[in-house]
Every structure is written in structure tokens, then in C-alpha cells.
Amino acid sequence: MAGSAGGSPAMAIAGLDPPVFVAAAVGAVTLVLLVVLFVLRLPGASSPSSSSSTKDTAVEDKPAQKQVAHPRKKVPTHSHSHWKASGGGAEKAQQHKHPLCFNTLKGHMDAVMGLHFSPDGRNLATACTDRVIRVFKVADVTAKSFKFLRINMPVGIMPVDVVVGDNASEVVVAGQILSGASLSLYGPASTAAAAAQAAGKGDDSKLPEPELKWEKHQVHEKRSIIKLCAASMTHGQHAKGGVIVASCSEGTDVKVWTVADGRCVGTVDSNQLCNHMAALSPNGRFLAAAAFTGDVKIWEVCMTKDGQVKEVAKAMQLKGHKSAVTWLCFAHDSQKVVTASKDGKIKVWNINVRYELSEDPRCLHTFDIPEHPSQPKGGVPCFDKLALSPDDRILACTIGPMLRWLDMETGEVMDTAETAHDGHVSCLQWSPQRHETGKGVNAMVLATGGPDRKVKLWEAPVRDLPRAAGKT
Image (cartoon, rainbow, N blue to C red; front, top):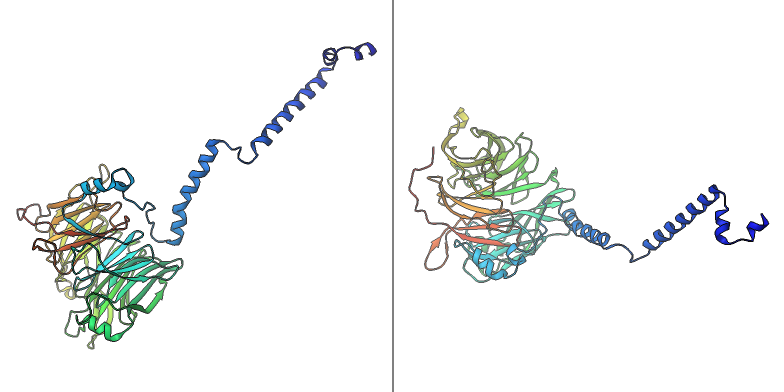
């Protein structure tokens, strides 16, 4: 043993027992691994792939943060059009401009969720997810810029729709808060200014400054408002012309309110799992709801002898669609209804019937919805929004970003804007009055809004199609 102890190191290792040698080797490898792991955990030592993954996660979190501030509507996170995102944006935007689009209302800082013309067509109110209600002066729709009245919503309330009351200085706003939906009326602080504006004697270049008149919270409990509509009560011998609004929830309930004092004067239930939208007839007599099934329920807003709303009672039902009705609109005489369904059909109904004697509404026409690029491959074409022109002869329809005009006598396509907005068209309405659009043309004007921060004005296409073709 003494001789081996005095030998070389190699001989000493060779002289070790095998178990001892294996233990020493394992210990050395373990030590090396610990050193490597310690170095990798030092700050700044992460791999490029790890850094890239962290950055991607941060970007993906941004839309979620935005949705917390606006729990009802999933607002698109992109804020620029695809034309601007690529090179030569102005040139490409000009190339894609549709000939019927003659002007754009700018100034919105986020998605436009709702819009509504005043009864005289000289003002246009918009609801934007930047928490601002704007009332634009659009007496001259060809102007290069538009003045507007600005109403800042309280912190925590996201406007999702807006309607104009008796005059342009009176707007009802549907809002979304964490605890549910809200309704609020903004009107002029001065009664004299409001009266002058309503009588058409006020300064047309400036609207009276608004103030909050009334406010309601959780109007549909915790459910959100998906559509707000308004009408002036002009039917019947006792009508006084007061304005009512209907708020349609994402559930099955629809409520009717008086604008003057914010009273809820009626609640109806579609009993169809979920609502798609609701509309009031122009004379304020009927309320209709499009919901989960192919049947459309219509209620009558009944009045007392002193002109007050007495109740909202069930009147009739439109039966004939084979799938869910996505949208509906009343004709301007309040005697017809146009419906669009997922069954690929548009139907025109006569509701001027003696429903109190159990007389059913009659389907006057049925049109096939024309195929379009936005429909799923092999799917049935449908529209998600409709708007009937003031003369009831042109139907504006949208699906996704596409805007289409149909002739109501034939069902034929009059014109199409494949990309009306950079994203889904969120709202549309015809001006109640015609406008001078240039070159002496006094035309019907359609307004549309979308997630691209824009409100676009469109001139109605010329009706030059052959009549009585394509309807059944």
C-alpha cells in the first residue's frame, strides 16, 4: 500500500475501487450542470426565442385590456385601414373609393358604434367608443369639414348607440358599464334655446350646449343594450307628437321609454332565447323585434285619451321565414315591414290589417338574397343590417364590410361597395330629407359607420332597372 501511495496520480485513480470512481464522476457532472444553469438564469442571458415569445404575449394582452373598459362590444383593435397599413396609402384609398361615397365625417378617435339623423336631416349624432357623443352639422353634406357638438360621457360609461329626440340638441345615449346598461338624455340647458331650435328659429350654426337631463342604470339588469330606436308618437287622434325610444337588450326583453321624463312605459319579451334587434314604426304605433327564430313579434304602443302611453300590447306576428330573422325595418308609412333572414330570403309584409279581429299580416313579396363574397363557402347568403330609403324604393343592406343597394320593386342589386369600411359596418341610416350633393343633384343620402373611425356619406344609386323581375 505504501508503494502505491507514492506512485503517479494515474496509478492512484486506477487503484480506486469501482464504486468510488463512479460516485466521483457523477458528482463532477452534477457540479458542471449546476454551474451552467446558474449562468443561464443571470439577467439578460435569455435566448432570443424566449424574448420574442415574451414580446408576443405582451402584444396579445392589449385587446383584452381594451375589452375590460368596454365589456359589451368587442371593438376591433386595429385603428388604421388596410390601405394606410401598406405603402402608398393615399393612392390606394383613392383607387378603392366608391363613386357613390361623396364625403366622410372625421374626428372620431375609435370605432363608431351608432348614428342617427335629426328629423330635419340637418344634424347627425354619432356614438363612438372614445366615450364621446358628437352631433355634426350636416346641412351642407358636401362641406370639406363639419362642425360638431361634443358630449363627453362620464368615466366608466361606453356609448354603444344614440338617437336624436325632438330636435338636434336632444340626444338619448345607450351606454355600457360594468354592472349593465345605462340610458341618459342630454338636452339644452336653456329652455328658450331648445324651443327656438325646435321651431327652427335658432342659430343653425351652433347648437345649445347640452346638459344631463336624466339617467337610468341597469335598465336591463346586467344585460347590455344592442339596439336603440326612436319615433315620434303621431298616430291616433290623441297623439301629441312626443318622442319615445325602445331599448333592445341582448336577452329577450325590450323596453319602451318616454324621452321627456325617462319613464319606462312598457316592457315586452320576445321569448326567443336572444334578441337580434328591435325597431319602432315611424309613427310610433308599433314595436317589432327580430330574434332567434324565424317569427317576428309586433306589439302596439297603446295610448290614452290624453295622449299618454297606456301600455305596449301584443298585436300580431310575422310567420314565414324558415330561419332566424337578422334584421327588420318599417316602411315610412308604418304599414309595411321588410325582414331579412338566415334562410336567404327578404320578405315584404303588409301589416295594415285588422289584427284585433285575428286578421294576419300578408307577405307581399319574397326576394332571394343575392350571393356575395362575404358569405361562407357553401353557405346561404344573408344580410345583418337593413335600412329603407325615405321613398321606400331602395333597400341598403350590409354583411361584414360590404354595403349593397337593392331595388325594392325587383330585388335586384343596384350597386355594391365591397369594402364600405375597414371592418364590419356597425350602423347605417338614411337621412329623412334629401340633400344637395353637387351639380344640382338633390339626392337621398345614406350614412354608415364602422370600426375605422369614419362615418361615410353615400348618394343613392339611380333606379334604372327593369321592373317586376325577381320577386315572388
